View 1 (cartoon, rainbow, N blue to C red):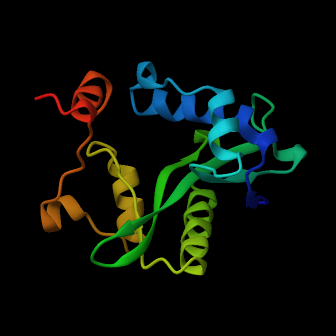
View 2 (view 1 turned 120 degrees about the horizontal axis):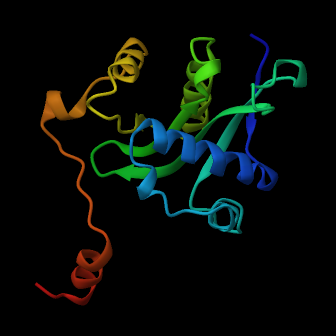
Length: 171
């Protein structure tokens, strides 16, 4: 299939926002999405961006049934491992359903890996839902391994009132 992978631009935020909602619907958590197009514009394209993004785009003659040429994306950011050093975290990897199985997801993941290696990273980290067998199989096929099952680490989160309380030192 004919497609290109390129760095996301400010003008892509509308399509990234659309695909974030599509991903959330796929993951059955669309009620959890609070981010807006404006948030993406500010957080990804300011002087000190919180994330970076790449876009998968097809030519106009291959556009989606809904008329989209931007058919996939990945958001990523750099982090640090106190044991291994520089790392890249892939927050999202998404390809519209009608374009899956054509190498786009692998190309997006490969590009994030290339960017990470170019920045001196030694690992690529990300999460995947335990029920998403096709994605788990895809990642394992790429040489990734399951940190939770192999090392027992769990991904933890603190947000909302709990985060506020924690920041204030409340118990």
